[in-house]
Image (cartoon, rainbow, N blue to C red; front, side):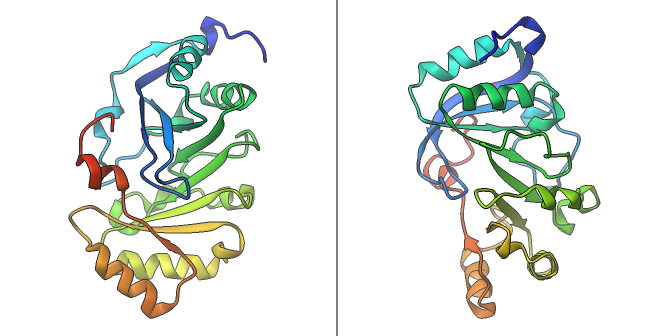
Length: 219
C-alpha cells in the first residue's frame, strides 16, 4: 500500500465502534467512518449533523483510528462519502489493510471508481425523500452480486414506486434488495405485511442501532 500523505486528507464527522444496524451485515461489530458533507437534502435525513463541520484528518490518521478498535468490518458512510474525492483512496487503503469494507452511498454520485472489493450499499431515493430526481440510474450497471440496493420507504406511495423500480430494473437478479421503513412514519409491521402480500423477493429490515440506542449520535 502506498504511504498516505497530507494530500489524502478527508473531512470526518466521526469514527466510532458499534454494531452494524443495517444491510446483510446487521449485528456485526463494525467501525464506522462517517465523512462530512452531502449534496442531497432528504426530507427524513437522520444524520443532518454530518452536513457540515467535522475535522480534517489525513488518511494515515484515519487508518490509525480505525485500527484502534480491532474490528474486521469497516463501514464508510456519511453524509455522502463519495462527495469527497479522497473517499476512493480511503476505500482502497482499508481493503489493502485487510478489512471487510462496505460503503453506504445515496446512489446520486458515480460508483464506477469504487474498489471492487468494497460492498456497495446504494440507497435509491424514493419520491417522499424529495430527492428522487437525483438517482443516478447508470450506477445499476456497476452492481456486483455482493452489493445491495436499499429503499427507505415513507408511505404506501413510496412502496408502490419502489415495487415498480424493482421490477423494471430486475433488481433482485442483480443483488440483494432491502426495504426499510422511515422511523416513526411507516409501521414496520405494515411494511412487512405489504412485502408478504406481494411476495416480493426483498429483505425487510429495521435499524437495529435505533432499537438498541434510539437516535444517539455515534451509535
